[in-house]
Image (cartoon, rainbow, N blue to C red; front, side, top):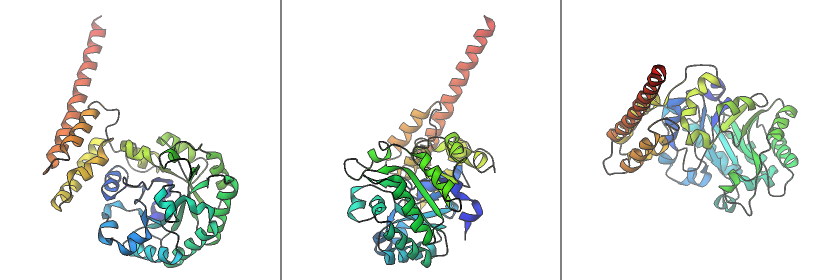
Length: 345
């Protein structure tokens, strides 16, 4: 096995998120954590087999450990796509059995596969036979009127018999009728105890919990019960929290601050700009980096408004960064002035 085992990366991972976790996003996240496992957006087998493979599967070597998430339900096609992913150097192949979107359902993959656990196991057996890197499953606890205890354990047990040892479980049902994909991320209640129970009763399996985890403190609490935690929107919307992952979750390394991350990311931006990429394609992932810090609004505004202009370059990032530095300086001056006034009184 490759770096996924070496790094024990499942202890903290960043979820695959459509339209968000592209290669630029993953490099930004890697500037904050060298240890977290990163995932691609879900790629369908059709896209991998017949699409622009060079563009779709591209990643920067710094992203390791990085996993490829596939969407599909044809074992032979999944096996072929998995072989391609392994040849490209991905550290893990993951099957999506959790996405609830209409487009995914119409293609007979994603969360609707919770109703077909035997097929999922067949798919995983095909993937596992095709590659040497880990083959894993990301699933829900059930869909629609399924009994979560039955649907989750049945899926896991069948896949385990097919050779799967790692499961990422989004601790919510997916309602395929009546709720939008966005609503499916919030409305169905979370059932963390069921995922904890899965780990207790299947101790030989690696169980990673996902869904509603908003901080590293919450992640640490979950790690008392399961092997790993997958962060989703919290990692994307407030990426600075990833800066403490190595130190607090893996017990290795120092906390990386957002200023340091920006400086590291700038070298990547410069290379990508020279290769023809647009600035906004990279800076859109940075908007939440200074969440809660003085100047955060100016940071977002400058990157959003000026980053989309033709010919926009690193000077835009520098200008946004300067706005944060200035806002922080002014806040410190106000605080110092308040202390002096209090001391004089």
